[in-house]
Amino acid sequence: MRSRLALRRTLTARLLPLSLILGLVIATAAPLAYLALTLGGLREAGEARAREIAHELRREVEGRPVLWRYDSAKLLEHVAGLADAAELLTVAVVDRKGQAIDLGGGGPPEVAALWVSAPLTLHGEPVADVWVAADPRPAVRGAAGLLAGFGLLGLLLGGLVYWLPTRAIDRAEGRISALIERLAGTRAALAELNQTLEAQVAARSAELQAAYEALRRKEENLRQISSRAVALQEAERRVIARELHDSAGQALTAIRIHLQLIAQSASSPETVVRLAERTLAMADATLEEIRRAVTMLGPAILDDVGLRAALERLCDDLREGGELTIEVNLDLGDRGLTPALESTIYRLTQEALTNVARHAGARLVEVDVEADEGEVLLRIADDGRGFDVDTALAAGRSRGLVGMRERVELLGGELEIRPRPGGGTVVRARLPRLTLAEDGDDSALVVA
Image (cartoon, rainbow, N blue to C red; front, side):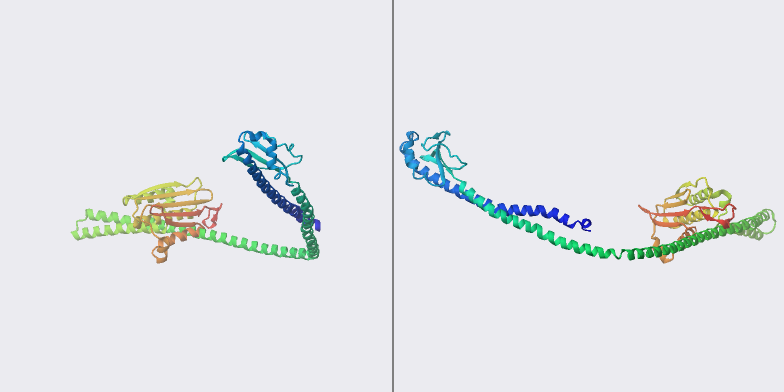
């Protein structure tokens, strides 16, 4: 268990360098400080002694400015008392040219010395340097003694810094191992509980999946029913429209022809002519009403010329009524569309263009229809005044917009009406592509 925790190994890897650094700092800090302070004091004492010797020699130099350097005995008399200090190893005088002046005091010291100097001046101008060699050995011996003592102290403290935490971590690791061993006893129960819980979750997930599939089938069925309802409604309207067109329309046309003959050939009074003309006007109005009713009941033009030609005629009729420019882009593909889908596209376009002509004050309208394998996209954009859709719907002033939205939702599509950047309105309808079942019955519409 300890090998898995590896707490001691991790702590040792961090404590060992720290303990070594701590012991080294404790062992060397005090000796190095002592050595630095002692050597500093020795340097200051040597500099003071060099200045004293230079002061004594200056009187000899001032008395004999040229010959003083050649009289070693005289120079020794001046420095004899000052150069005998215990901390001094030797004294040397070096002129400005770098040549040593013989003082008769022997060669350089045999040990490493601490050299310091002071200038020897004549009338304020330096003529030589007085060099004094101080003995650093007492300072080194004192630092070595301190190093021995503080080294033992650093070793002791570094060992304690290493040993105490490792001892504590050993105890903690033992307690943790015991706790893990106790927890291991509950693994079987937890595993069994997990298996039971997983089985419950799986069963619940299966129930939710079944409910989701049932809901999806119901939604699909509802969409199919809605599509069939729209298709049957449009089929019924087309039947009624054909009957009105074939019966009432032909009858009224015959009345109009007969009245024209009466008006042209009758020799009756002018009242008959006036009544005949009035009847003619009424017949024309009746025909117009029948045409309008036929259009409202069902766009029979779709059966006559198809969706493409019907949309183009719708746009042509709107162009003739004013100065409105309509750009039409129709990409219906090679596959045919179902009657319900064609009727919805035609009705949406008719309602949108009517709203533009009545309320928008637009000069340009773009009508785009694009059909692919999965859906049909309808886009109608104008550059008119635009309006707030939410406000219009909340105020109940736009029954046409509500009808457009209901038509799209019945086919499982989405309708978006929003302002156009730069002014105007954009109507976008996204409709799933519908296809007839193989028997060709409108009641068998399904979503492709």
